[in-house]
Image (cartoon, rainbow over all chains, first blue to last red):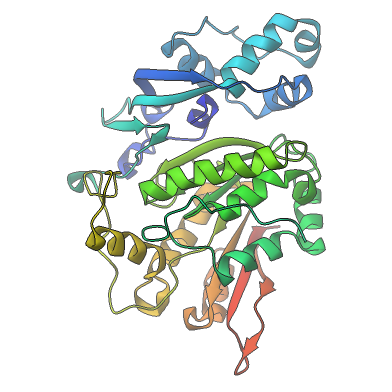
Length: 127
Length: 247
């Protein structure tokens, strides 16, 4: 699963949905792999307004990536800075979480990730 | 006709095999009417998220991802899926990857597939295009719904009984074949974005007119139309695809 997935996911426990602590989920013991994908600058520029930047920053830091700037880069900044483009391409397009856990900051439940697939089925006591 | 994704790697003992319903979804999504709708609706939205619930073999989401340029008028879409069956999740990853590599100049950006109960792990308003080919066959009762510790978490050699159970999750719909679909429909106001829409397959026994009536009951802005059908049988559409959206 790509890291950007965590922008769309939250705890599957109904009672956690209303708590801001349930998003983003926190990766734990994550094993990452890098795919080799061709850099598409325009795609990254257009992706920026789609991203919840503060949640992505939290996720990136927790996964051990260098801290992201406080604000998402503007199209002009991105187009002028090849290193910035490459870093974002690596983070958003090439990196997958293959193993580990995703932890809810509200209830503490840990969702296992195996072979790149997160399991959001709940144990019977939480259903 | 756009090419159908290759699913020759999929184990049909425990994963739903693409059938008439799957192909009706592919045909419907690629009609001029639907490609025009999708293209104009998301023209000014950055990278809409196209999410399939219950992809099974992955044939439908692989098709949508591989042919993004033709369906949406742009390659700039995100795609993902959620299935209750972990084998289906793995199969979907492979199917999407194969189809994308065969259509290298038209495919979107695939985020991955997670295992889960319908839309339970999704944030509010996350989905722009939701696709659902449900377990729609009327059955006396629903299979036991799986939990985290069930065998639906991959083991190397599932038993015949396990395989039968996994397949039952892909078709058994309980009363009117609607028990699972109703749960999904009730979650649409929560998970669809303001511009979001959903494509849901129904069969004649699902009482489609009642389903449409329930959706219109969500409020004045809700719309539902039949956008694809497999033809009539005794005066009824055997299978149909409805599109649900807000104006």
